[in-house]
Structures are given as C-alpha cells and as structure tokens.
Image (cartoon, rainbow, N blue to C red; front, side, top):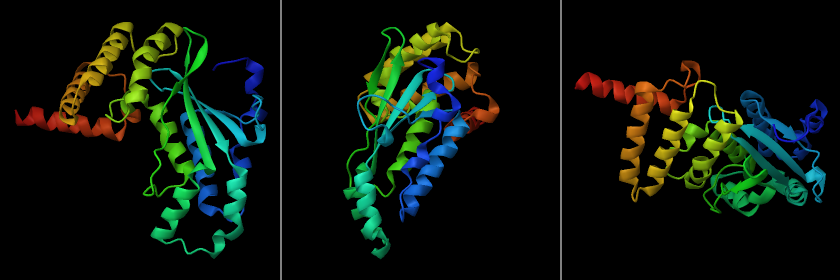
Length: 254
C-alpha cells in the first residue's frame, strides 16, 4: 500500500455508507455491493481525504491487481446535492424502464470517480481513463458501475484482454514491469513471463480490427493455458474457464 502506515488505520478504512441517502433504495444497495466486493477482493477504503476538497464527499478505494500486483486507486466523489434532490420526490415516481432511464441519465453524477495507478518509477499516481460514457441507455446506478471497475482492476491481467480496455492496456504495458521490480507481482510469475505479457499487450494495441484483436487474444490465452499456470483453479475467471473449454474441445476435435 502506498503512503505511511498510520494513514491506513482500521478506523479510516470504512466509510462508504456515509453515502447512504433516504428513499434511494437502489443506490443504497449499490453501496452495500461496493462494500461486499471491497472485502472480497481485499481492497482498502479511506474516506478521510485532506486534499482541499470536502472530505465528507470523497473516498479513495485502493485495489491491487491480483496477479499483476499493480496498485490502483479509485477516487469516488459523492454529490450530496443530487442525492438530496432525488430523495425529495423519487417515491412518487413509478420506476418503469422509461422513467428509470431518464433518472439515471440525468443524475449519473450522483457518484462519479477517477482511476489512477501508482508509478513507482516516478513516485506518483498516473491517470487511467475508465470513465462512464454518457448514455440514456445506462440502466444501472453509479455504484454498480464502480463495482464492475473494482473487479476489472483486481482481475486486470484478464480484463486487459478485452478490446475496449485500451487505456488500461496502455497503463499495464509499463505498469506490470514496474510492479515486478517493486516486488508486487504474484511470486509464481518470473520476469520472462512478465516481459512476454507486456509484449503481448503491445501486439494487441497494434491490431486494427475486432477480428484481428480476437485472433491475437485467442493465441495469447492458448499460450497461457498451455504453459503458464499462474491462475489457480479456484481463482480462474469465467472467461478463462470458457477459453480453456474451447481449447480443450478443439484439441479433442483435432
């Protein structure tokens, strides 16, 4: 973890529930989900931020890539003005599909966030653009998206193989190397594998179509499943198990 030990005492790690708002049941359930996932992936939270802003409205969630060891930080900003406005009359609204789309599109800044990774070579946090694109079709509360980002960063070595994760991929090309020299990676990954993975990410970034990206990604995953067992069976993602089954079926067919 980055910073002084005293900055992360237990009494300063819990505080997401200060964002609870009356009458906003779905929003409040999102907060419970954030806290549940935070505990599951071993992330830490600090809601006592002294950075010139109103500390009651901001929280940092610190997440480590499970295998990459890269240190990530989500900075959440809670807009109490929006929460108070929503709380006034939401009980008078029938939460139909159409009405919910209108509400979530208008008030998606209820909780917004920024993502950074810690660059030990420069001693500072570097920004990663993982923002939500404004869309009237986003039928989820902001907290739900934050949970998705938390899991994405925790499982970064799998998430980064999604074509849409270009900015995360750019950060990891450098970040995974730095993390290894910092000693943060999984002990089972030697530098040859880290170097190979970084090279694969560069190759993925050079692809010019969804088809070529998918082909390159499949080759990477096949190489991993053949001779790189850094995923423990109990920790494999659904995506990894799916690809393993596909490769196994292909081998049986051949």
